[in-house]
Length: 351
Length: 274
Image (cartoon, rainbow over all chains, first blue to last red; front, side, top):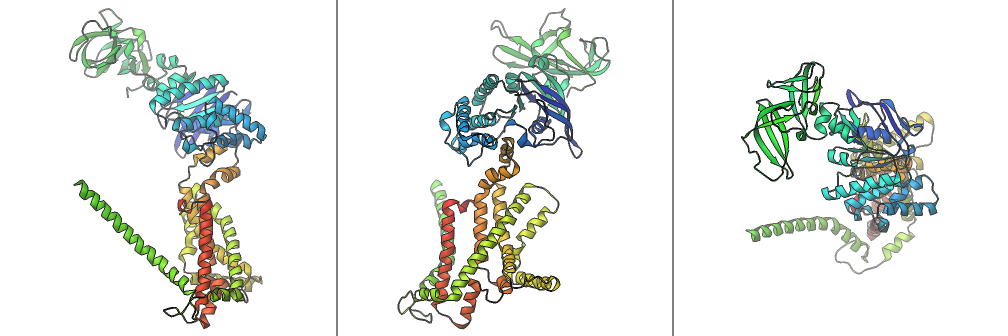
C-alpha cells in the first residue's frame, strides 16, 4: 500500500496531446476515480501508472519510489483489465498464482495465498476451472483476485464493470468497494459512468481533453463545479448564455436579468441544478414567468422543462406530494431560485 | 413456403457435399492406387494384378540407397525445421506485434521461397555458393551446411505464415496482464504468448518439415557426391527401372507423414491453426 503522486504527466503522440500536465495525489488507502468522456486521457493516465505508456514528460511516484521509467513488470501495481485478460490456457488457480510464481514465492506459500485470495472474492470452489468455464462476473472476480494476491502497492481498475449487465454491475460495485476498504489498498479506477464513479469513490478526478478539470469529493463536484464542463458532466443542469456585469447581475442573450454571484464582467454561462429551481411566488431573488414545454414524471419528483424566453430554457423540479393537479404542457407558471443557487462561469459557452 | 425453403437449403447442402466428395476422391484416389500397386506381384505394373506380395517392401529394406536417403532426408528436415523455427517464430512475432518501416517488405520476403519455383531457387543458391567458394575459399559447395541452408529457406515461409495466422487471433492485453503481474518480456512470451500460438508453431513446423522432406528440385542443385536424399534416390531409381518398389517407397513416405500429422494432432489441434 502506498501513496501515488502524479506530477505534470504529459503524453504526446505527434501533435496530439493525450494528457496535459496531469497532476494529482492519491492518499494511502484512498479510492480515487478518474471520470471523463472517452478520449479524455483517463485511460492513458492509468496506463502511465501501470507502465504501458511512457510519459513524454512528468513523473510518477509510488510510495517512496520514482517509477516513471520503470518497466511494468518491476512496478508492483495490480491492474484489472476491462476485458479481464485471464490467461485462457491456465486454470483459475494458475492464473492467480502467476504473479507469485514471478516473485519466486515458495510453492507451499503460493497454495495458501491463492486459496486465500479466491476466498476473498468468494470463488474458493472454482480453482480448477478454466476461465472460459466461468460466467462474466466470476471471471471479473478472478481478475480481481489475481491483481490482489501479490499485495500490490496500488490497485488499478480499468472500466472493470463495463462488461457486466446492469444488475450484476451494482452488486460487484459494492463488493469491490467493501474489499478495498477491508484491505485498505490505494485504488485508482477509470470509468466513464458517472453514477458508478459517484457511488464508489472517496474522491474523483474529472478529466476532459487530456486535462484535469477538477479534483474533489462528490459534493465538491456537484455543488461547486470548477467549470462548465464539470457542471454538465457530473449531474444534470440547465445552462444559460449571456453576459455578466461584474457586480452580481447576469443578462441572458434572451434579455432577462438574473441576480447571481459576482464574476468577472463579460461573456459568461450560468448553470442551474433542477432541484434548486422551484415553483416560486414573487419576491425570491429571481422569479420569472415561464411556459411549461414538457413534463417529465419521475415518481416522487416531477421535472418541468420551462421556457423563459425563446433562447432561455430552464428545468425546474417540484416534489410530487400527490395532492392537487400537476402543471401541464402550455401552462404559464412562476419559477424562481435564490441568487446563490446558480453557478456562473465567465468566458465560457453553454455547449 | 417453409417446406420449399427447407428443400432448397437441403439441396444446397447436398451440392456442397457432392463437390467435396469429388475433390476428396481426386486427392485420395491416386494415393489409393499407389498403395494398391505396391502389393502387386508382377514386376511390370499392369492391370489386373497377378497376385499380391510384400516383396517390394522387403526390397526397400535391402536397398541401401533408399535407407540412407530416408535417413538423410529425415535428418535434413529436422535440422532445417529447427533452424527455421528459431528464425521464423521471432520474425512472425515481430511482424505481428510491431509497426516498423519495411515491415510489409520483410513479410513478403519471408514468404518468397514458397513462390519462387524450386529450380530457380536451387540455381540461385547454387550460383551463390559457387561464387562464395571462389571468393572466400570456404568449402560450401555440396556441403551438408549448404544443403541445410537451402532447406531452411523452404521451411521458413510455412512457419511464418502459420504463426502469423495464429497471432492474428491473439489478444495482446494478455501480454500486458502478464507484465503487470511481474513477467519480463521473455517470460511473457514463454508462459503466455507461446502457449496461445502453439498450434500455429507446431503446424508450421510440420509443414516445413514435410516440404523439406519431399523437396526435389532445389535439392538437386545442392547435394554433393554421395549425399542422396530420398526424393533424389527415388528419381535415380526411376531412371533405369519402373517396378512397384517405387510404389512401396511412396507408401512408406505417405505413412510417415500421416503418422506425424496424427500424432501431432493428438497434442495440438491442427485444425485450429490451418
